[in-house]
Figure 1 (tube, rainbow, N blue to C red):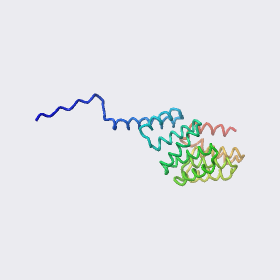
Figure 2 (tube, rainbow, N blue to C red):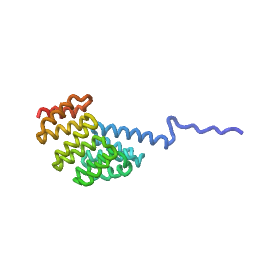
Figure 3 (cartoon, one colour):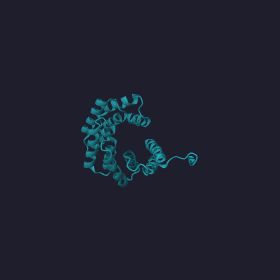
Figure 4 (cartoon, helix red, strand yellow):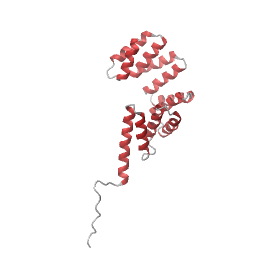
Length: 206
């Protein structure tokens, strides 16, 4: 019996289910890159587009919430960040982003709880440590904020954002010697971000 010839497939065609995830993953990567480059608008657009295919992707939901927060749309950002935290409860970055949003909304008890969760998951997560020191400064607890930063630097080694936070705190309260020491270490630190280095030079000039 003669075999029926198969129907020719159009050029460059692929099966639908195999094509869509690849496109969405590429869009997701572009969204992450845009956010890391400071372009929150583009990150938000791309993350929203990718989420049409990757509907429960915690990283994308976190990215949308962080972009909305950066753009000042806190009422829209908060549900996204809370959903991301529910989907990825062991991700310290998600809890830190959520804590930042709570801080801006002056929901301080929830901020403290989110910071604590982040630091329980990763005691060396510098973004959470930095935020914890800022929260203590907000309350006028300068000595405790300084202790948090100095302990973290002693434990984790020299970190540019933490050194800058310590130098800026010391300058603000007139504790100049440790502030100058932290700023000098940062200037000599290999690989310090250019924007942090510039801010440190202005701080030293003051």
